[in-house]
Image 1 (tube, rainbow over the protein chains, first blue to last red):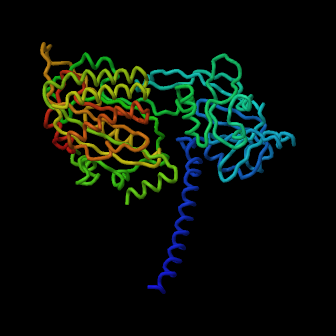
Image 2: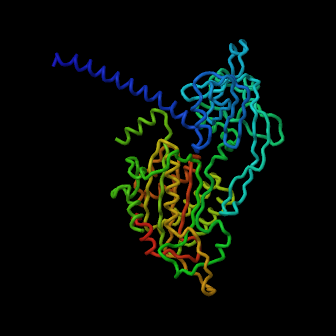
Image 3: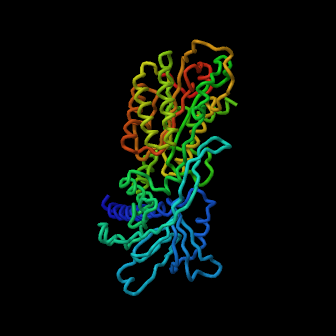
Length: 300
Length: 198
């Protein structure tokens, strides 16, 4: 008993320390990886993802920056890019920060810093980002009859995210740390945009701040939204006048459905893996979550 | 085992997404007025182009009507899953929409009525499928809802979720589509095998 006790306690301490270390590594690593994934565009075909990975880590002077509010994409013209890399850098996953006092006094110009696949744009407080505003219109697609959002025109303006920020916003030194920013509301025909609509450690947080402030979603998010999906006859007004005789109905009755979602779509194609997930719940648990899939095969 | 993973993910600051679908089957001729509520909510959703706030308001009305018709509840079922990744949750929601839609004639067949009837047949059955996705934890939804009390609590939870602005996706499907269409018990058995009598 007496012999064993010091050994076990030492072992326990060692074990606890290992566990704590593991947990801390995981806990610290978790949100950061999430952050870098979050604002990536849903469609992998967009050039941003590929261009972004091509740029080697380092600092690049920025000549010009453009923000497109159709998809929230930043397009930067860089100087001194390595050979073989195009000077244009496009991404939706961009953090911004104001230049610190020290950097300003050493006459540092705007620069882009890439590190481990994460990009941050460091700009002086009077830096103007060209803001491309897309005038959208909802039109009905003549082919499918479904409404779709169409860009009918573009307007150009300027966005100075940090202009007057020190006086107005009470976040002071936070400006010098790279964060995600969402531009303020665009006023048609109005002057340049100053300040920001939302900011945050993650893109979602910035969007949430914008939402609480303006009671609306940023344009880039609204355009990204999976639109309304409907089935059945509710969209066609004629359906209400034409009646089917109830006797001719086959194995299915009529029905209608509609739905809307704010959630991003998966990058990979969805598989049937969801059904076997241990976290699933529901009334069909006794037969496993596959009750749905088995019913599907029975129907066919 | 599962709760450990939950706790671990929560500690590391990830967002939890709950996606769930519930089926409610109502029986009786008196349930037909619900079709009016459902169709109105659908029309408003289309008029506002799928604005989630409008859909949520419609969902509240549907849930309230469903609770009022609780004496006609015949059977129910639910299913769902928990995700720590927004993309997976979105994929599941899309999958559920497709699955719900193929349980009825989603393409309306335009055939003229054989003769002008003055009376409309009234459906004996009505099924409502509600799918929602929300952030956080909703114990009322994440259980077996094949009991009347549990189902009632779930519908109230859905109403509360709308006012708490936690809903990220809303889908409502219903069959039959309108007054005058019928959903027979055979069709119900065939297309909704998971229903459990309450």
